[in-house]
Image 1 (spheres, one colour):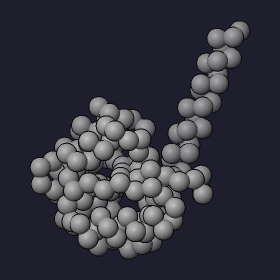
Image 2 (image 1 turned 30 degrees about the horizontal axis):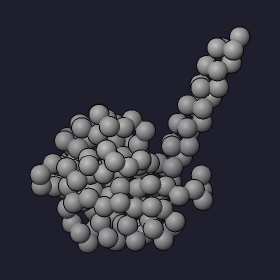
Image 3 (image 1 turned 135 degrees about the horizontal axis):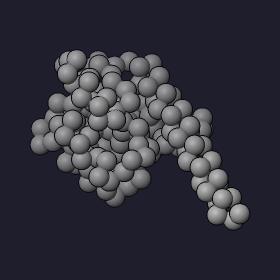
Image 4 (image 1 turned 180 degrees about the vertical axis):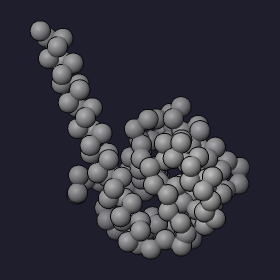
Length: 144
């Protein structure tokens, strides 16, 4: 999965952060979609296959935690990395409870982003291998 293009969604109300994060990810060969809030993010998820989401917590219209609540109505096959400039233990706990897998604090370095991305890619690969293995066992059991 090292060279595989990932479909990444960045949801953040700060345009500068969206654009800088997109630039880092696009330079590494990934396809990137952008949203300014959770409502826009949900529309993108409804209409596009997404592998990884970078999602801010504090945003207008629909914040990151509300976005997480709604996300799994549309997909279960996505890795979510939450981002905030105002970290709190409550937000961390709630994000993890709602299946976010990473939590980054602004300002983020390129190394922070790439480390989170690499861990998310590894989890995606493991999940895909587990799914494919289970599917193959189901096929074999059905044949027998």
